[in-house]
Structure formats: C-alpha cells, structure tokens
Image (cartoon, rainbow, N blue to C red; front, side):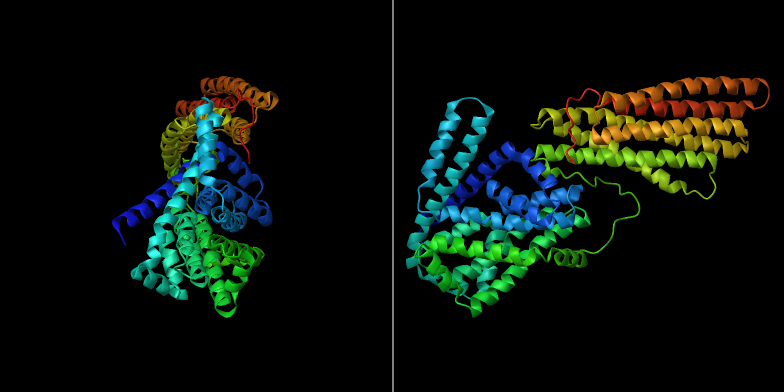
Length: 544
C-alpha cells in the first residue's frame, strides 16, 4: 500500500467529515429553533417522538448530534426520559438516509457543490448564505466519499488488506472493528461511508460487511455517552438507552445473520450495487429494532434506571442543574436552559421567603442550616447565570430570545436582592429572640397582614416571569399590589410610632418592627421589578 493511497484515503475521510460538519452547522443555524420546538412540542407521545427523531436526524444527517441534543434536553429538564426514548430510536432510523444517498449512482457531489456556489455568490442575504453552506457541505460529503472509493480500489490487491477483511468476516471481530472505527471517527455516517467504499472494492463479502455495520451502531453511542458526562442521572440514563438499543439490536441481528440467509435476501433486493446492499442492511437493522423495541420503551427505561441508580438529592445542589454549555452551539436552547435556571432560582427564593417569615413568628424547631445552604445556592446561581447570560448575548439569537436574555439579567439581580432581604428577616428574628422581647399581638397581626400581601405579590410576579405574561392587566395587578403595600407600610409605621409614644412598645422592639416593615416593602419593590421585566415584550417567548 503506497503513501499516496493512504493520503488519498485520509484526505477523502477529511473531506467527508468536513462536509458533514459544515452542512450540520448550516442546518442547525437555519433550523435550530424549529428543531427545539419539534422536540419540545411533539414528544408527548413516544411514537410521535420517534418520527420527530427520524425527521431531525434525516435533516442534520447525524444521529449522534440528535442524541447529544436529546441528552442535553433531558439534562435541562425539557424532556422526560420516557419522551427521549422515542426520539433516540427515531434518530437511529433517520441516520440511514446518508448511507441511502451514498448508494445512489448519481453525481451528487457536483450537483450540490454547484447549487452551493450559486447560493453563496447570489447575494448577502443570510438565508441564501445558509442554504449555500448546507449545499456545499453536502457536496463535500460526496466528494470525500468518491475520493475514499478511488483510494480503496488498489487495496483489493494488497494481501494485508485482504487478510484484515477476512478476519473482519468473523462475527465478533467484525462487530469490534465496526465499533472501534465508529468510536474513533465519532460519526456513524462517516464509518458507514467508509464501509461502503471498502465493499465497492469487492474485498469483503456482504456477510462480513453486516457484522461490521452492526458494530458501527454500537460505536456511534460513544458520542452520547461522552455528552452525558457531568449531567444528571436522568440524562445519563438517556445515553444508556441509546447504548442498550444498539447493543440489543446487534445481538439480535448477529443471531439472525448467522442462522438465516439475510445476506442473500438483501442481495436479491438490492442487486449488484454493494453500496445499496449496505444501506439496505442499515435500514433493516434500525427499522426492525425500532419496531421491536419502541413498544418495550418502558422496559428499556427501567433497565436504564437499574444501570444508573440513585434518586435526586434532597438538598438543593450547588450547581447548574439545567444549563449545559455543550449546547451553546444551539443558541435558542442555551437561552431557554438559562431561563430554566432562573425559574429554579425564583423557586428557591420564594421558599426562603416563606421560611424566613415562619422563622420570624416561631423560630422553634426550625433548621436554619437548610435556609443558609439555599441562600448560598442563590448567590452561586446569581454569579453563574449572569456569566452565562453574558456569553449567550454574544450568540446569534432571534429577537425574542435576545429580549429574554436581556431581561433575565435584571430578574436574576432582583431575585438575589430578595434573597438578601430574607437573610435580614432571619437576623431580625434572631435579634428579637436574643433580646427575649415579644411584639404585641396587634403588631404581629400587622406584620402578618403585610407579609401575606407581599408573598401574594411575589408569587404573581414570579408566575409572570415564568410564563412571560405580557398582558397589561395581569401586570397591573402586581403594580396595584405594590401600591397597596406602600400605603399599608406607611399606615402601620404611623400606628407603631403611636404605640412607642404611648409606651405600649419598647424602643428596641420599635426598631425591629420598622426594620421588618422596611424589608417587606423592599421585597415588594423587587417583586414589582420582576413583573416589569416582561412588560415591554411584544410576544410570548416561553414555548413550553
């Protein structure tokens, strides 16, 4: 085997992979937001989810990319594991489109490259440029395939290559070769393309190609497994489901290929076109296993849960639970993941406010450690979300996502300040307990009255932020509540000054009371800011 042969082979593989990447980037830029909507809206039923996975993968030509996206969505809490299983199975079927296109005897390379060149030269419109990128990527993919095929032809006369192909005809060796090559290349489309190029030389029988192809289905799982590192347990289970699907399929088809004349049947259907023979086996494998395993999805889910054990932590984790930086390549998803973190932060702050008020009225038997931990989580989320929002603002975002990212800066800041006022309320409660003085029943009733108004206002504001409600009447309810809180605070402060003057309350208690009034009023002000953060939005950006 000459150096020029190796160089041609590697150059062809490089063009093939580059074509896949440039095409995928263009498709993701053009349809990233649509893919997000499809995966979020249409996966309520696992059968529909399978069709969504098939469609998305057929479009972006990469089951690995779809599966990584699904793992990220599961980690972000946008998909449940049961929903993800159907999408993963559909992705396995969708990836057969590439091998099918490569088997057609048509000069796709020149066709797609020509269309891409015309689109890129036609003008500066972003839509045409994106289409040109997609077409050029497709063209390069086929140029790479043709280059690999030409480089493979001399190899059929090389004894070393013949011996290697003969060894790969062994079922176990063939599966291992396919799995390793695909794991290294990290693209099942590329590895199947290589196999089609090898088969076209006549150096290996279809029977041997089938075992390698089965192994390639296992090897493509490496990308999703790597993507699941550092994610939550549910996301890891989604990656394991992908691996289980292909491992079970490989075992089933190894038995079928050994006991039945599968190769003869495929050759009868596909004729002498070796590339089409492999494409047909690829389709049969994935379609058959999807038909068999999709109804058994609950069993796969249980098996994945047995492999990846453990329940959710009881204590709020000091980390981003929904955001995954690896999905920054899909800007709309990245913004929505950050939005999920903001919603989580809002829930923690609300919980801390309720705890602080309960602690103020009755501190007995209440564990302050949980409150302190959650306040630390709030501070951590404030810093992390703000940093990632800055990064997100530098991405290519549509108008709605850009507005959402901008408003979240203010939301995060107001939530953090509300958390600080909750800490102040805890300190006031501790000071009151230390002084061993009690408020009058009337004073406590007044604080309770104001607290009830503030918690109602806070919950309304957070619901507005979560649902991105732009209805002026709904936002007006919060504004009216804030005005009532201000009026009530002034009235209660005046009443309390009278109690101090009439010696019905000690000066120290008077200071603590006024501090409580001030903190509650400030929380109401920040709640008002939360509602105002979406007031100027033109459309609803929350899609789930």
